Image (cartoon, rainbow, N blue to C red):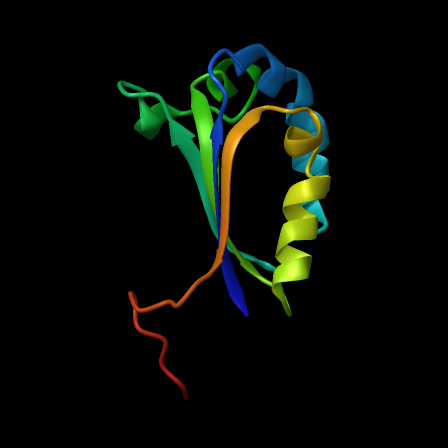
Length: 109
C-alpha cells in the first residue's frame, strides 16, 4: 500500500540537517526497495538544476516528500519515527496518509 509522507522543517534547521545528513542517507538505503518516489522541498530561489546532494546543497532543503510502499500505516509511521531527521527533531510538520496514484496512470500488463 502506498503512503505519502510530507515533512517540513522547523525554521533554522539547516545546520542540524547537515549534521544528520549521513545518518539519514544511510537509514534510507535500507528502504530503497520501498521508496517509490522521494525528494526534498527546497527554499525559493534554489538552483535545482545544479543542486549538489551534500553539506552545501542540503542547507537549501526545507523538508521532503516520499511515497512509500509498505503493508500498512504502522510501517509508514515507523519509517518516519525512526528516521534520524525525525529523531533529531528537525520537523515542524509531518503528514502521513494513504496515497492513491492517479498520474501517471498505473497500467496492468
